[in-house]
Picture (cartoon, helix red, strand yellow):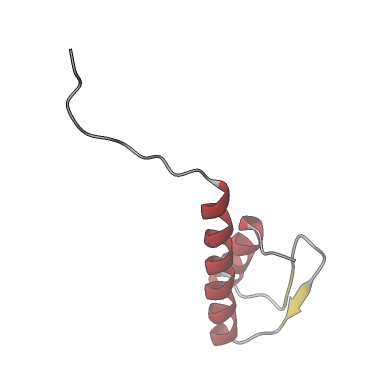
Length: 69
């Protein structure tokens, strides 16, 4: 199961306000992790979310040059 942007936002909230348990959108939950573990998880989640989003959003290309009259 791929991580979502909502999952990434939840883990960021946990880092700002540490709690004992967090539940993700697909039902997975996590309890009592150290800050280092949460930061490592956030890094992995962010990489996956960014990679997934870059595949789904088309890239725009611009051509700069002269237009003929």
